[in-house]
Image 1 (cartoon, one colour):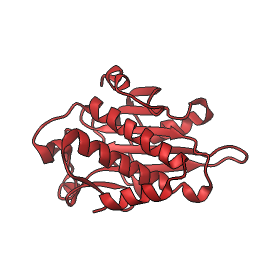
Image 2 (image 1 turned 180 degrees about the horizontal axis):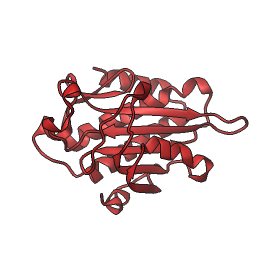
Image 3 (image 1 turned 60 degrees about the vertical axis):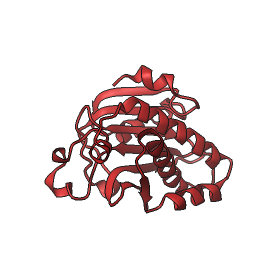
Length: 209
């Protein structure tokens, strides 16, 4: 993974600081562990995860050298009732980025799945920690199956999971996809901070499968 190549393409505040690991238990666990020691917009990227997880603690297949596993640290200054929109805006950002970089028709499925037709190509796990008198710490974990072949998936999910390479027949540089996701995250997070809730929801509905 060439992190310098990612940084060169970053246009906004999210992704200006990247911490890279060859392997972690999970990128969300690392991000949550940083607590107040990391600036907003810091991104944790791992080449592999030993205990990658999705919703309800489900395991996320995370082999090295193939996919995207990253977590974004945010400190949103909004009312608690709006925090659920973080997952929605993240799904919109990912769908925009993946469509733009791959040409694939990527949709979103409630609440946190990224889909290529009827198969899951990625997912989002948002975890929020609140401390009295402090802004909430929100960690948005993003996983995208990039260069996995069909046989790389466990049999248990082979009929429901896919990758960018499997769908398009070509491999991708993860760096360009990562930077575009982070740029789209920055764009939609700014909309979130500006209170453009309905615009975010409308875009999510447009991408919904």
